[in-house]
Structures are given as C-alpha cells and as structure tokens.
Length: 310
Image (cartoon, rainbow, N blue to C red; front, side):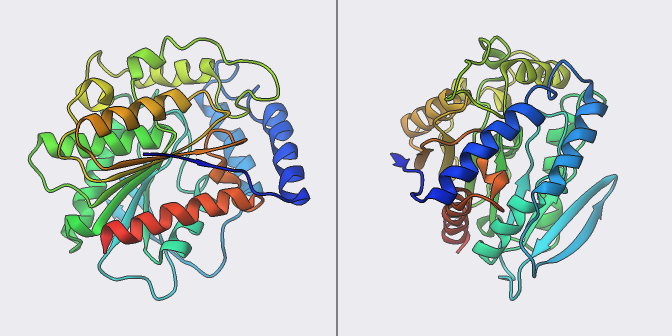
C-alpha cells in the first residue's frame, strides 16, 4: 500500500524547509562524495551533527560487544520487553550513533522503547561483510540480554536501511528467529544497479542530500560481491519477512529504490506500507529539531515499532 504524505502547512515550516535545502546544497552535498576521502567526510558530518540536537530527558548509556560500541537511548519509563535496533546511514562510509542521535532520540521518546545504535565498522577501511557482521552481533547481543525476537524491531536509514534489510535476510538464511518488524527510511535496494545510477538532477526538486557520485563512491568502498542476496533484495524472495514500513521523500534519488522494494515485498506476500513524503529529501528525519514534517514521520515510525513489538 502506498500513502502520500503532504508537507505540513505553515509559513515557518515552509521557510525552514527552504532554508535547509539551501544549507544542505551549500554546506553538505558539494563536499560529501569524491571531492573528499572518508576521513574528511566524517569530520565534516560530525561537525554538522552539532546543529541537529536531540530531545532532552532521555538516558544515554553504552554497551560493549567485543570490539563493537553500541549507544543506547532510553526514554523515561521505557517498555522493558521491547527494543528498536537502529542502523545509521551514511553511504556505508560515515555516520555514527552521534550523527543520528537527534533522529534516534525522537524515535525513542515517541515509541517509548529503548533504541540501540551500533557504531558498526565503516568502509573503506572495513569493507563487506564487516558492517553486516556488526549488525548481526548487535542482534545477537539483544537476544542474549533477554529480548525475544517478536519484541525487536529493526530500523535504519539510507545505507542503514540497506543493512537492516540485509540483517533480516541473513537471519532468515541462518534459520534464526526474525524480528517483529522492519522500519526503513530510503534504503538502497540494489547495490549493483545503484552503482550505475545516473548523475543527480539539478534544480529546486533535486535531492539536496544524496548525490549519485557519493552513492557510487560509498558502494565502491563497501565492495559487496556481485549478486550477494542480502544486498540485492529486489532479486531475492522476501517471503516470510516481517511487516515493513518504508518512508521516502519525493525529491530524493533513492525514491525508485523504495518504490521497487515495496512492490517486490508485496509480490512476495510481505505486509508492506510505503509512505512518500511530498516536498522532502533523503532522510529529512535528521532535521527533526527544525521540521514538523520530520517529527511527524518519526511519530509514524514509532507507532509502527510499538505496534509490531507489542
């Protein structure tokens, strides 16, 4: 099922959305991609993350699983039995629990569930399958700490959405119990095809976040072998996967990925809803401190997670 979500009315929301488009085109998109190597991109994104603060009133703690550090955001009176495993985006080469603290704090607050955010290993220093192995380790740690699979929701944005889906497909291959739900924001759904993506369009409606050049760079660094089933979900039977909620903006270059995934999931018999947010870009949820539309999208994700894990 496809649901189109209109941008909220109001002068302030329109002004902030217009300002953020310009800001991202000037301060983010030109510098994130082949112009900088991974270290430089990470430094810039870490600095920009300071402009996207999260909600107050949550408890922040750290879990250590082997080499892997996991940040846990817990709201007041959090549901003890259920949890969200969140895999951050960043084209597989940047991002962290810190860069996504704003988004995940809203998700934790609105859902009433703790959110686990692993700082999984990044490409190019750690190519495939390092990030997927870390996602599996985090899921295993949740199970070891007493969370049953039917009370775990796996979520992620962009590259993290790709990893979230890959994680569930790998669990299915291994015969492990699957989580209760999948919440995906703008996932890349065919890494081989995406590597050949045409250049990003120009103009007002162009995605101010993700460029085709950056996507190609990140996928090249990740170095997934051609035809790997977990990273080619459009060519993999998804039957048996848990219910999915997919969100995407109508201005982003990853919208076709989300649309094709939703259609394929439904053909495989998976319960799937696709939300297309009008006049919004890739993972606009990151700007939840500023945009009412981002907060509303996260409220929908939170309600899905609560329902799936109930």
